[in-house]
Length: 549
Image (cartoon, rainbow, N blue to C red):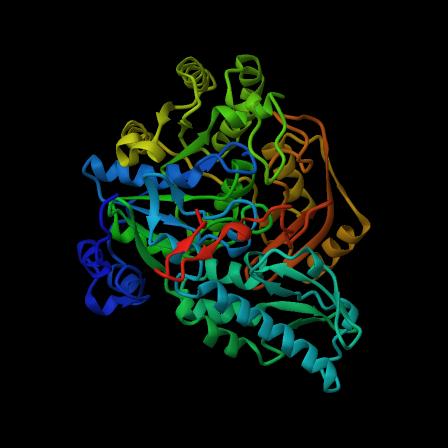
């Protein structure tokens, strides 16, 4: 690992002026929004999406691969930038621990990035909970808007996992819930806004619930949107940091890929595409979740289109999908997934095949990155690479950035460069004017392999209300388990013919999409038996954080 470079030096190499950099210490800074106006006529760089197969609970190295690919592109002489979501405190203190890459493929300063960074997540929570307070204060002081307390749909948020807050009763007697900050509509708004004016407008459009005569009530009507914008003004500026090899990294917003739309901000990508020749961006979890939302939500709003996509796969995850063993969150992977098991690997390839099919559905060339782990055998790695090519992947590379840094991703980088030169007819999965039910069914059938969709009575009622209010043109954000193509985490491989049950539909009018929640999904995670928090401490003698990674 090389020494971190002063952030001002990195910014200068990117072409940022002194007035466009807002330093937060020596090694991190925000980028002022004015850079987009100055560079508005600059040709955009090539856009590269990194997605994956369905992972184990430990992840399959998508972030490691994204960072490594950007470093590999730089080693080949290209100006590359990686754009990432900020890790969330819930997983950091829960199962996964730190989430900024690892080994020789990570972003720094690690502790800052995994904890508070520049305080954006706290600003989101404050703005969200301010609106929640204003709602209950309005009800307390006579309710002049005639809000129906039973139809208030605005929860409170918390940055940490806490299952006991999934349902709470307030002093007023009104029942509500907490969701994790990354599932907040305010987080989605921050990620999808294109400037401060757009942010303010979106905040005003938030629908918190209905009146007693079925009319929508907005944050603007409650007089709260302006104060929320004040809390979020600085958080709208993306954060500039670096990889261990000094490659620029822009980290901004953190919506989860399973219960939110799973991508970093439009602002981060807009800046990177004007500052770099190639921009590598990561979408949360597998292609049926983060990548689908990347295309159908983020690209729909931003207008940006990727030139190529990378699908990250690993032997251990494919063996899991082939029945080679079971995984329990918080416990080590079993030996049956770590050792040679060609039969399980062969059966598990069906999962990769679905994800390749998903990317082809969006018309983008796909390269498979086989993320290499120490226990992997040469024979199985070669077998997987050959099978990926048989499945019509444009190319497949063995990738080892965790061990070898950017050098371990140079082959992948070369193949991605070639893919970027191929014709790309990027398209979306559905049109805005089809019904809400049809959009959900399209995602379920084409991305998951489902046989159909069943809407529970509550969801049917939500769909009727959303349609009546004119929100039926919005794209869909599915809330589903990441561990299976289906909504059942126990169904591995490439299940077919199952039914996707939708328990509720949430209207995020400010963000501009509808969240369809699959039966059994929780928007507030819980902690495992032995959370990562138990191993994290600070050395009082040195002030160094220990146990975070």
